[in-house]
Length: 402
Ligand SMILES: NC(=O)c1ccc[n+]([C@@H]2O[C@H](COP(=O)([O-])OP(=O)(O)OC[C@H]3O[C@@H](n4cnc5c(N)ncnc54)[C@H](O)[C@@H]3O)[C@@H](O)[C@H]2O)c1
Image (cartoon, rainbow, N blue to C red):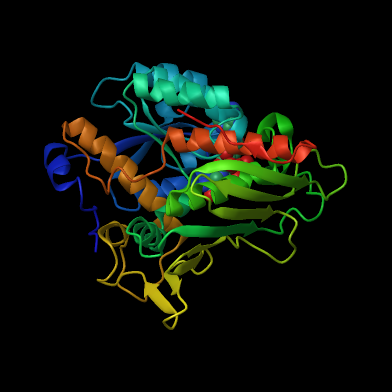
């Protein structure tokens, strides 16, 4: 089991790098959703402090939000442009080690590029950005500037998801034949109140991008499926729907998937499935065994076969793989959940930064977090689903390459 400050780099890197990492944030002001999750996730293991930010679209709200968070007044900025400029002038011993981008989608690309070009490591939420061209600029910018860049596809941080991936990789399921990944929510079943900030930008093409539901949560499905199975998408066929009258973007979508190994899949996602909360679920069937995992009960991984009774793998037990153990903080039976899984993305991201700063190689467990290539593939997926959904030619090749 991982200890409080993590295990893997880490001994070596922390001996040579004995201080907290300095975090900056763009977005995540008062009343925001995911910014607060990022802060808690980053600080879960005690190795990070928040020292700067441009937290909101107005200077007044940014300042009020920064003061709430005990950020020094002279490092609370009125805009992200001002923050990027001022923070790049900071002396080495105060300079940010990374910046978290937790704004609505339309700002991910310009904010990421501004900080990448000034040499800052970045953690950005999904979907990575609006277009594949923007995504490739981020991929290339991060590579060319030696930036550690994470995309917070947080569901891959769960220990039992890591266990599932390891079991597929080891061939325990046999050849994968079929995958069903689903993510129904119900919170957008009616037109949203105008004061619901989260709904307002998600249903606005200028801020959300080309897609609504498919971009917001279908992207999580694509990432989870790819992470666990390693399958490569060959082509897809989608229908997408806007059920709520007057809404400009999709609020429901179903996608048939064909993979290069001959496997088939179904990805189904909705924000109008009344009564559903965050019911992300994946099932994978191989020639020997099958697996099932669900986000609302994440400490358990179900393994099925025709020969044996159902097996339930449980988080925190010695039989799990090292990557799952390193992503575990509590003994078995004490539930871990959303914050911890999000924290595992940050744990590996920040351990990779410590390794870089200490001049040591991050090991395989630390390198296991989603990066810009996964983010770019997600953007390509969103575009292809919308293209198929809007076209009479339903089956379209998926030709994403880096
Ligand atoms: N990984 C996940 O599971 C997950 C969950 C929720 C949201 N998200 C993603 O996180 C991002 C934010 O979503 P949210 O639900 O927290 O949205 P939100 O509306 O709650 O928060 C957005 C924040 O960005 C700020 N902001 C807007 N313009 C800004 C600007 N110019 N400068 C600085 N700050 C600005 C807003 O004031 C607000 O504080 C989105 O990209 C979303 O897709 C990811």
